[in-house]
Image (cartoon, rainbow over all chains, first blue to last red; front, side, top):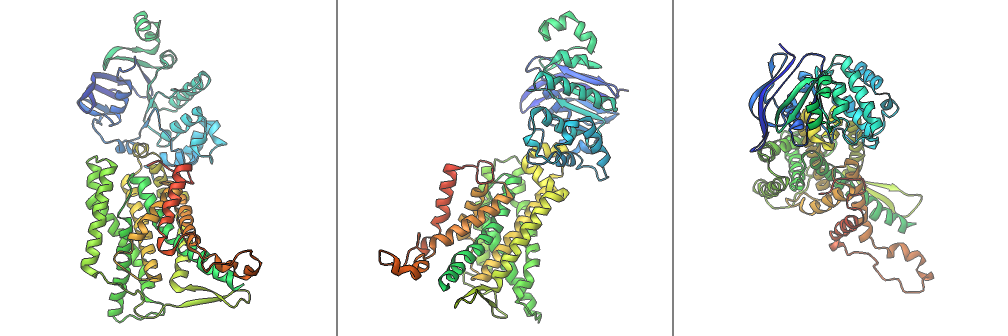
Length: 234
Length: 330
């Protein structure tokens, strides 16, 4: 029984179908990376997992619990966190307040968790009383991921965490993703920078036109000449 | 000296008083906009309803033979605020929430709030008639005369005006502490920043919406109640308030509570300074002036007071469309 299992998922926005039967399974502690061309339905799949897309068929289960069509506000209490690609921070709240809001669904004292997050993202430490909207792109992304980590998630969904970042920040973010994963968090990540992302993936899922094109370990996908030719730009 | 005290009374204290009313109203309006993304046109009538609640509760106390050292309406203002807060939550539940849940566009909810405004005005007239009422039915208003550095004139404040100014400053400090220190207050700012993200973060939007109506409704009741204590209670009390309060909200930056406070006082002081007769201040130096001092030099005649918020609004929208504190664009 796998940790996360998506079975023949179909869905989309309104009448428009984007996902045409996607399968995805992941074991606990793995990093799953979803890559594919624009319009393949990568982000849609991630949003569908978080109840943000109209699911018309198939199922999503996590540790045996069916979470298909669960409303998005019910995920935090199940320790599943989602970091959207854009608008993923509260700009007029301070860094500290952003993290506090991440912990809104928990009632216990989580100052230790917060300190731990500042350890993972040291640049945020000095800026904890600054408004998150005033930070650089890379630091905002750290705030966004930090906010999601406040519930100590079992599963973390990241939608293109490196979008719009310079290459230097990009590898910094990937390093952080690995660091977060080492603390026992299972991660599903959608990425445009497919080569770098697959390099850290336990399992890679190549999507095309809303269904699975290839599924293999990250290493094997990178070595697969067909994948390289069609999806990784040679 | 007497002329200067006249200026303090007519321009500064009056500005502080009307500015407080506008600020209390604008805070509610701006919070509702920040959280629920619609302009609550019926907010002025929530003020009228709150004022009537204050009077009705005082009437009930009085008929029960309750005697108090302070006027009864001042005693019942706080329970009336709670009642108005509950009333506002009720309005939301019955009229606005069903529309929100069905995914209606904000403009549709604005239209609904115009309907609610008309309905409330009708309801108030059905139950209370159209006449003018005195809030101080059990005892007269105290008037405080504060001597000012040996001037022949005194600073003059009435009892409700004093309560209003003190209440407004206390409410602002309380609001600031609530928004920056409490979990729910921070969650309100988070929802105002990014409602979708707040939802997926697991913030309870229902609690935030309730808190918004409690604060907005409570402060609207305080503003309406204290204003009608300062003058009289009329069923159309709110009608002349709605425009300056909207102006204050927009001037301050829509969705910004601190902006609403600043905007409220800005509009209030502008009104009193615009209708102030500056000729009075010049009278002591009249003999030095090269021209005859006219009897009245005011920027705007009193009866055209309502144009002042309009002018401020136009100036702000032309030169700084997002308001003093950067707010959202409508």
